[in-house]
Amino acid sequence: TYQYPDLQYDALEEFLYEGTRPDGSSMAQLVTPCKLRGGTNTTVAAEWLRLVYHDVATHNISDGTGGLDGSIFFETDRSENVGAGMNNTLSDFSSFPNKYLTRADLIAIATSWAVATCSGPIVPFQGGRVDANVAGPFGVPDPSDSLESLTANFAKQGFNVSEMIQLVACGHTLGGVRYPDFPTIVSPGADTSDTVVDLFDDTQTFDHNIVSGYLDGTSRDPLLVLNQTMASDGRVFGSDSNVTMQSMNSADAFAQTCVTILTKMLQTVPSTVTLTDEITLLPVKVSTSAVQLTVGTSELQFQAAVRVTVANSTTTTVTMYWCDRYGDAANCASGLKRFAASGASATVSSPTSQAMGVTLEKYKFVVPINANQSISKFWFEIDYGNGTTSTADNGGAYYVVDQDEVLWVPSMSQAKSVLTGVSGVTVTAAVKNTSTPSRVYMDCFGRATTDYIAANATYDLTLNSSIPAVAGYNFYTGTATFDYGSSMSFDLYSVAENGTSYVDTYRQAGLIGVALASTSTVNSTTSSAVGGDSGAGTARPVDSRWAVGALGLVSLWTLTYL
Ligand code: HEM
Image (tube, rainbow, N blue to C red; front, side, top):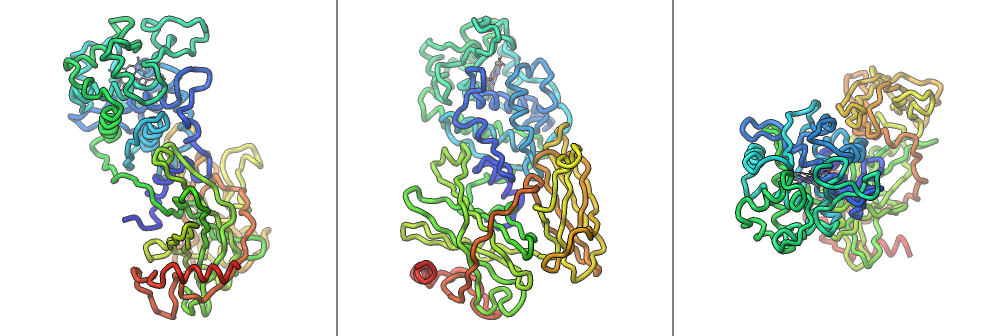
């Protein structure tokens, strides 16, 4: 079962269901809703789906090499990967991989989106793929290949004849063939720029039209009805006397078969890779990358966001509660909890969450925190507006704020390009001045680099006495001089004199300079109707926490808001 924080799960889940990088930039919107590629009559989804297969096609089941490993990023100059679609796709993908989202996992998620946004089924996603940093072997099938050679090639990739037919049909339900890429198959169009694609079937959607057209003889598939030397779809589809094609000749059968075979395609990875379980939607989600305790102009500020799967017809309200870290009420020992209503909320989605029919609403909180009280843990009460309320408290473990010794200060950090036109970032950290740290440093990581190869390095921060102390914190500044790309992240460390190391984990350079929203009003309560320890040293049993039930919560809401 999931427990916050889980940086890997959080990153994969967030990208899969929200479609965005941690700084909010959306990759999902490039493909949604089954968008045409600008200037062409094929879809972005078709280009993405072709790319994933070309990465997978070099798998060798006997020696366990190749497969979905992102090596395609280094292979688009090969004639077997001809076409603008490939480089368009790499450009779509290039800024989104991050520390916990490899290029290969990103390609797998993009596949699931491509199918779902064109009205296809949901192809489940498992993570854990490892990126190749060099080109792999050649081996993508060619339309001129004989049936023997195609069958042998698919067998080498791990697919039997029936699976080969399924995979090609599920691929060639989207997109088509372009004259500039295959001039011996399709004729040049009237449009001499030749961005017109000769489509495989009559629809842009992910449907069984490719199958029914083949079986009833009305197919327009250029790899079937045009140059017979290049008619690989004809050879493949008919290779088992149409048994497989007939079994896929309905909307449901096609969707089900494609889920199974495309799942197998996404599982075609080097044998050294172990995939995770399926990444499923967390009904309530606190994103690790969006939780930030930082220093404002005169006090601490705490920012968090919780994503809730909301009911469409009602208005959900969310309240964040937290415990002090220091003083009489430390860890809510005296029963005192602080709380605030959310600021703005935003709907987030990806083709996957859209296809599931769920509405995901993200509630954002920014609250002032007195540095002498600080914050130890937080949780949320959710009122769905339809009589249902629930607590999101990480399964009773709460969302714990690890430390307040070293804090990133996004508002005092800068993209170096702003200053000098040089890549890199200048990071400012706030470090508690109760002790002098022996070292303050940051471990930087970037995967969205210009050469596609993940990079990491460590940079020291030094005391910046030009910035006056705030709320008991001194400021340290350091610069990462390399270009780690748009999804760069860093862990910020402070090592105390006694050797204890504190870390502000997985900070997003994409949020540099982004000012925190204005803070909400903080209230406090000692009501036992809300979670958090209600007496010194008394840990409440997790499962009976809500024995007081919704009524207690309703009366608290009444007290507070009426
Ligand atoms: C026998 C194996 C295969 C052959 C010979 C083959 C060949 C081709 C060719 C020649 C094109 C036209 C590309 C262009 O004009 O730029 C194409 C497009 C495409 N292929 Fe395949 N393919 C095969 C298998 C697959 C598989 C297994 C998939 C995915 C599961 C797939 C997905 C696609 C898609 C989506 C397009 C359309 C791309 C677009 O519209 O931009 N193909 N294929």
